[in-house]
Amino acid sequence: MTLRNRLTEEMKAALKARDDLRLSAIRMIRAAASNREIELKRELGDPEIQEIIVTLVKQRREAIRLFQEGAVRTSLPRKSGSLPSCSGFSRSN
Image 1 (spheres, rainbow, N blue to C red):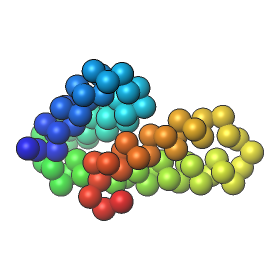
Image 2 (cartoon, helix red, strand yellow):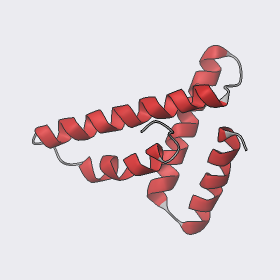
Image 3 (tube, rainbow, N blue to C red):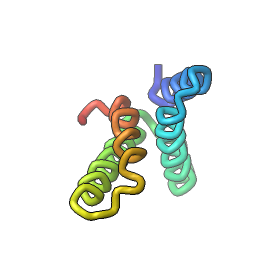
Image 4 (cartoon, rainbow, N blue to C red):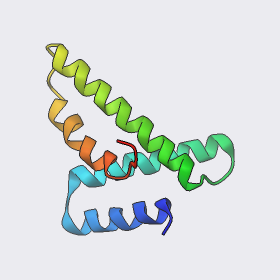
């Protein structure tokens, strides 16, 4: 099963389970992959989607670190909650 198909199946499961946090993370991954496909004007393969996921996980970790260091804690629970959802698709956490 390709990573794209797995994301689609996981999104369906998250919709059925009403798991908003996981659904949001999967949609974020799919949107980033779609944007990259539009940039490149071709369909992405699994390694390229994997690279996008790794980048998104790094961005989330950095955002969490910055929120924890600063006084701004408004969106910290949402950002830190979506990290496991994103990294669940990443092979190299």
